[in-house]
Image (cartoon, rainbow, N blue to C red):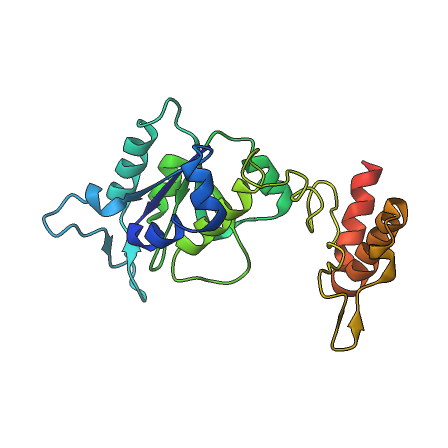
Length: 235
């Protein structure tokens, strides 16, 4: 799977691309991540990509020309243009179902904003899909792009050591509720013991315990997910 990240600050990704599962996925040719500096498509000698907003107001707006021309050039690099996503607090909220949908794509272009955002004509001309990672504002779209990459690559076959790991995670296809509690060695720590059932060797009892714990944890913390789960079963 190929990710193209269009940004004003590509150096942010240098360390990120060399860490953990993502680095292994890149080394194993399961994933490609290509940062692109939108400043290279600026059309003046100072490489300016932003300007003051028409009508006045605080901050600067990213100009349409370098962004549109950068996207069009990057789209031409591959065998097909890919799915274009603009990271925006005004977009569709990212959740696991959307992550699962994105993981079926062979190429994603992630457009990262800064300052007061993009000139509206970027959206008018390119018609990107807007995605938000939550109801808050970041300094830029780079962290949101990393969140999408991290979430999506977990679902690409071969990236995780155990393919079932992602199935039972919170919100995932095998469990739309919150995940059950996990325990490991030592069996007792500071007077707190791991549940006996997990050490019983009875896989049916373990599965039943985990399911019940998942339901109870979801009731306490995210009861709205129970309603959604019931709706999904009805459908």
